[in-house]
Amino acid sequence: GFEVFLYSHHVLMKDFSNYVVSLSQRLVEHAKELASKQGRPYVYLPSSKVSKEELAQQLVERDGLKQGLICVFASVEPCQSFDLRKDRASKKLKLVAKERKCLHLYFYYLDREFGLMHVRLQTWLPFTIQVCLNGREWLARQMDKVGIAYERRDNCFAQISDLPRAQVLMEKMHELNWPEELERV
Image 1 (cartoon, rainbow, N blue to C red):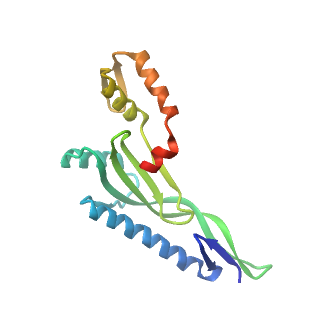
Image 2: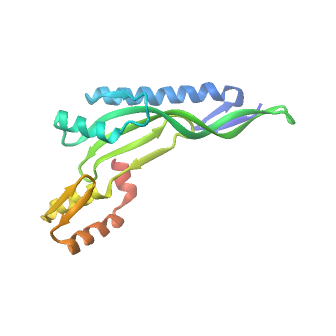
Image 3: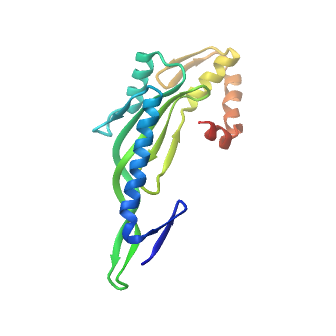
């Protein structure tokens, strides 16, 4: 049969589904272990419509967190992935792209540079990962460092005492060494 080369393993097409399930299970177990070791909750959310950011913020306030892992949320959501289909003409299995639903893990952090942020990991191939940062959180931390006063309302700045200096700071975000920052995160 055909083989698929995945993560340094040769996998027969007929074994593909079982292999992917085992990888997914390992990701979920790792997330649970990470949360447990850091004394933080792992929470399955039965609805993806719940505001994960609000729940994370409530945990920050409830537990008086200043930095580090806040929690890990798990939620079933749509994703782009793969499936096996039998090709009638060749009578062989083919790997095809497919929209499906799978478990996503949300690792919420309170980061020293970026503030409240999260990493979203799809637990099914191709294991898509997104790092979600809030530029206003980052800017607020930068303004705090240099003593620029500001007033925030939700995710907006209602007033900034030195707008030109704040703009200069914001433009420095483009100069960050993103590979290094993402590796740190």
